Figure 1 (tube, rainbow, N blue to C red):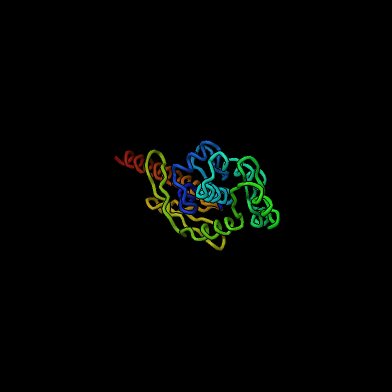
Figure 2: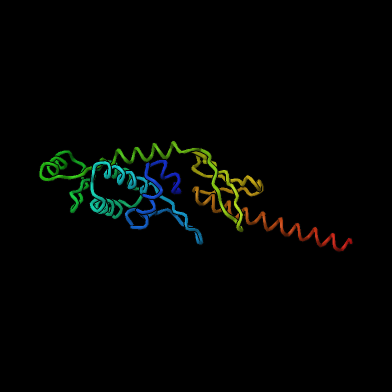
Length: 214
C-alpha cells in the first residue's frame, strides 16, 4: 500500500522537515501514485524501506552525500516491491564511493576487513517496515478541502482485503472506497463534490417551486 507523509513519519521516525528535504533534493522522491491537481506525496513500501535505511545510516554517522550514493543504488537496482524477498537476503554496504549489495558472510567480511564501510541489513529493514506498516491505525481522520471549505474524511482500513473506505463526517452521504488510502481519499473528495452539487440543485429547485407558488 502507499502511505501519505503523515503515516511515513510514524513508521520511520523521520520528521516532516526531513522528508520534505529528502523529496526536494531527490534523495528520496516518493514513488507512490499521484492524482491530477493534487500535490500530496505518497510513499511506496520500498520508499519506506529506503527511508528507514536513511535514518539508520544517519544514526551510524554516515555523511548525507554518501547516504545519497547508497540510496540511489538501492532504488535503481531494487525499485519494485516484488523484489522484497531478494532484498531481504542482502546487506547494503558503502564506503561513500562504491555500494556493495552482498548476501554471503565471507564477502561481507572481505569488504569490511579492507576498508571502513557503513552497513545496513536490508532484511531487518524489510521486516521492520512490514511490522510497522501492519501496526498502523485501522482508522484515522483525513482533513480535506473542497470548494474552499474543510471537511473530514473518516478512513477505515480493511486488513483482510487491503482496501480503504472513507466517509465524510459533515456529509454522511459522501461514502467511497479505494484500493489504496490515497485513492479512497481522492474518491472521497469527488463524492463530497457530488453531494454538494446535488444539494445545490435541490436548493435551486426548491427556490424555483417557491417562486412559482408565490
